[in-house]
Image (cartoon, rainbow, N blue to C red):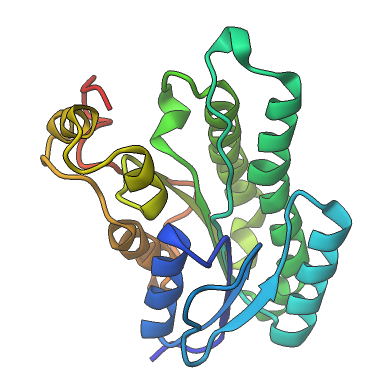
Length: 241
C-alpha cells in the first residue's frame, strides 16, 4: 500500500472527485482544493477552500498545504470554460481561462517542488483536454489546454533527473454532472456525441482517474512527458464530438 499525500486541484466534483476516491483507494491522503467543499469528505481527506482566480489567495492556500502535508503527488485538474466562436471571444475571457487553467498549474507545481526535490520523488499529472487538438467554440479553452500540454513536456525535461515525472491526460467527452446539464441523456445532440465516439459511450470520471492512477504510481518512474487521451478513440480519426 502506497503512502503520502496527494494534492488535487478542483477536487470537489466530477473528474476531481473520482481522482480523490482513486487516490484514497491507493492509500494516499487526498488533499483537495476547490471553491466549495465536496458533498461528502472521504475518511482521510483534507479540504481547503481556494479560488484559483485569486493569485494571493491561491498562493496562501498552496503554501499552507505544502507546509502541513508536503505532498509529493499533484494532479492539476481545476479549470474553467468560456465557450465562444472566434469573433465573440473576449480578451477578458481568454485572460480568465488562462489564469485558472494554466497559472494554477504553475503555482501548484512551484509550491510542491521543494518537497518533491527533498524526497527525490514526485508525480505530476496535468488534466488537459482533447480540445487541445481543436474543438469548435473553444478558442480560449483549447489554447489553455494546449499550453498545459506544452508545459507538461517542458517540466518533464527539467525535472526528470530529480526523480519527478510529469505527464498529462486529455479527456474526451466525459459524463460529468456539468456535461449532463448541458447535454440531457435523451437529446439528439447527446446521441450524436455518443455515436461519434468509437467505443459508443461517454467516458466517466473514473475512466480519467484510472489513467491518472497509472501515471501517479511509484512504478511509473520511466514514463514522463507523455499525453494519454482518454477519449474512447476520438483522437484516432476525425469523428465529431
